[in-house]
Every structure is written in structure tokens, then in C-alpha cells.
Image (tube, rainbow, N blue to C red; front, top):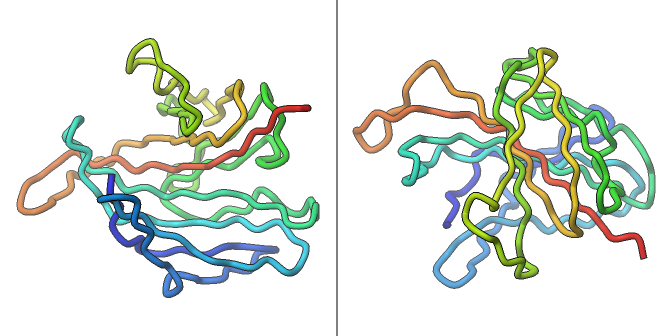
Amino acid sequence: MSIARPVSAGYMINDTRVELTDELKAVNQGSKTSWGLDVNLRRPGTYTFYTNQAPYLDPTEEVVITQYAKVVIDAFAALGQWQPTIGTPVEIIPLTRPFALWTNSLFTGRVLADGRPAANVSVEVEYYNDSGVVLPSDAWASLEVRTNSAGEFSVVLPREGWWGIAALVPDEMSFTLEGKQYQHEQAGVIWLQVRDMN
């Protein structure tokens, strides 16, 4: 689907936030639009890139979703701080280092909602299927786990490629979009890259 221009984007390194929203560029893929950044990382460090999306309607579920996504990039094997808190309303804090992951690694994270551990929250795990994996049915497109009382969850990543992990927290307030009220969900997302051990 097409994505509206993000509300904000940038990265954090060593507790320093660098705002890059003005540098976002539209990327067209056929009739769909997404957004990208060109960033040349010249210094060793562990960079947590983030983007805060504008609310959008999921027409299949009739719910408005606001997504807060991040990915941790380790430049030049710096092995620096990989647990910074961005401070979004919903966020996944990795308890497993979120980079240099081999296939079948176990990833554990903690979901925070308004800065506090979120218990019994749905966490959806989805493979970015650009390698043509044939699914038996749509039910296989993602798997779902629930957080425990400490807001923690774990999942095994069984295939090389990119995995998106989204913690979905319902908002108590409804959201008005184009004059109509919808249920609102806030999603904290972390992207992980997995590689085969050759």
C-alpha cells in the first residue's frame, strides 16, 4: 500500500537524537509510494533509525493505525548501545541484540506503552516475503504471540531476510478520519535482519 509522508524520522546514537524528517524522499514502486532516506554512515556506531507514521486506515479491519517503527544499524561492528528508548507511545525495547542475527535466532523484546511494560498485548511477527515463499493460506502470513506480565515476548526467526515485529496496543480514544470515527491502535514496530550461516 502507499504510505503517507511520515510525521518524523531520524536516528539516535549515544543518547543524541538527529532529526532527518526534512530529508525524506518519496520512493515510487509502480502505483505505490513509500519514503526513504540516504544516509552515509562514516563513523563507527550503533544507530537506531526511527520513523513515526501518520495515522492510516486499515480497510480490512476498519481500524486506524498509528505506527512507530525503528531499526538498529550497527556500523563498522561498533557494538554500541542497542537499547535506546525513542519515547514513542508504544515501543519495543530489544532484550536480544537486534542486529547480527543468524537464522533461527531467538529474539526477545519488551513492549512499553506510555513508558510502562504492556501485559497481554498482541505482537505480530511477519516475514518480508520478497523471496517468493508460498503460503498454505493467508493465516500463515504472520504469527502472533502475547506479552507476559512484564511486557516481554520471544520469537524464533526461521528464515533469512527481514522480519517486522509489531506490538499492537488499542487506544481508549476513538480516532476521527475523514469525518468518521474508528477504533484506534498504536503499533510499536522493530525491523530485524536475519542471515543464514554459510
